[in-house]
Image 1 (cartoon, chains in turn yellow, orange):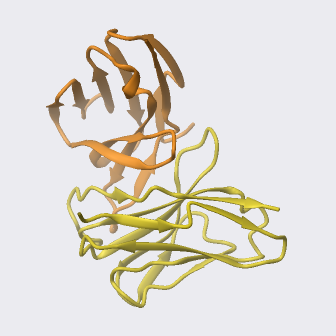
Image 2 (image 1 turned 135 degrees about the horizontal axis):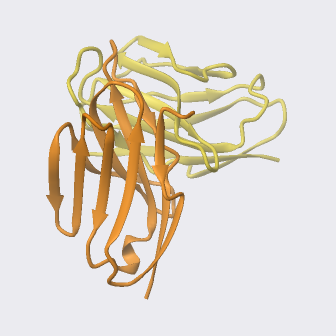
Length: 116
Length: 110
């Protein structure tokens, strides 16, 4: 079945370390997104990519980096510059990006990142 | 003021009750999305609508574009409906920008 796979489900990071969260989709979707969820808050957009080899900053991109070398993969790196990385991270994809009309986003099961 | 608000924030219901969750927004949208987040964190799409009403099983979603308001109804609620329900709006911008509401946490007691 098609879907989005995020790994790992739980991730622990020491202070000063970079960590990379994986997101893979086999839905043949062009657009992919990374969101951060904090308790009591709505999801906030970190980065998005509308097409391979292109990505744009979202609302809270500082301290994060991404790459989009393949259509199916959109890994997120949480760098040591991110001062408060403990959160739940969700990856999503949709059929198309710019100019798309009402394309629903499909979500992964998330990765919970904690600082040791 | 948040651009997307939901009420109530938390809701506890007895099994079998009719449940309503509300979403109001203050921006121009192209569509509105109702999502369900399971206790483990995964999110599934329930409805996407831009006008009128949609029904799927025991779930009904309505939207009033003029009033900038949407409701999600659950009939004959069941403990397996316990989850966080999130309203998200798709903005009329150059990319698929989505603004998410804070979610409504629903607990259905047997």
